Image 1 (cartoon, rainbow, N blue to C red):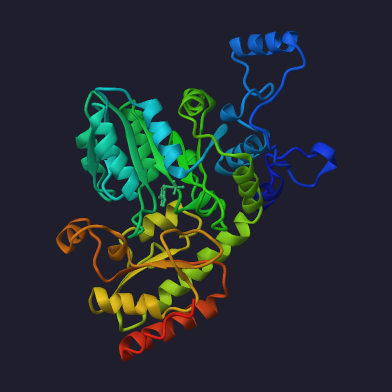
Image 2 (cartoon, protein in one colour):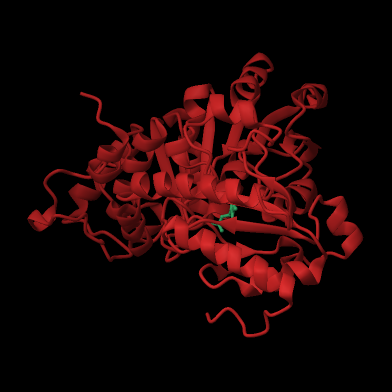
Length: 404
Ligand SMILES: Cc1ncc(COP(=O)(O)O)c(C=O)c1O
């Protein structure tokens, strides 16, 4: 019997009977694993040579039992054969790309991606002789035109940060299949509750598990999910590059995942309500949220996703300072550069970028843009808080601080 998603988040991937009859999967706090005698080592080496994986643990950099339970749960939730857990989202992305790509290869990636992923492509991949073409997410024809005989990978995020553009994954997967090129999608903003890229034909899905999957702003982790044959060399690379997740973070991730369905449903609902509220306010010039009919990808998001996610971006009438005033006047969300946790988190992207105003405009980041990542607080409170911040911004009465 296939279980419903919320049941899988609680029970999936974990042994029914755990060590010491514990109700929770334990943290196995060790850097290495021991062998009873030389015969046991020989048996282990033989099973490894036969391609058998996971018969027992060997050394902490190659894996640990807590991390493997988290991986099984994540594979189930994402609908993939296997999952690999990493020390951070960036580690998952960079190890995956380093494994899939070689000198002379070419990548097509979305223009709008997390800035460190762009930096990795622009600085590191290029330095190692891997060429990168950036293409707009809303124009798949330009992705097809960018293909070369050396293209090995198509990569995008969906929804994107910060304007929540949505990629048509079924069409991207079809393009990849037709041209024999692998497709990789960073689905961090969507979560596996709202979007299943593998079911749409995408080869590999990656998440910054630091965000919604962990959900409590208390861990760093990343995950890549897909077919076992594709993940085997990435697992080997993880053992060499050293980015395995530690047992404590893996434990926190398992714990966080148990409430994923509850949290994400609430965040979907609260973000949609906040977006609708903002769309009706005279101080707001534009709301970027795929759940609103005014969003350029609304129809696609409705067809492809089962929820629109917890991030709402919007632009405020005024300038950089007015926007900072609004952010400072909010009393509930923290100001910070993350999303996906139980605490709402807000940021003015222009204030966090070390770019001059011209460069910010070229990067499509208006000075007046605010990114609001909704937590699980009561949506009525969040909306009332935004309303009072808009009033205080207008009246110039913001210097009292937000009381945080
Ligand atoms: C979409 C996206 N992908 C990847 C990352 C990197 O994840 P981490 O911070 O876990 O390395 C982030 C971080 O903000 C992100 O927003």
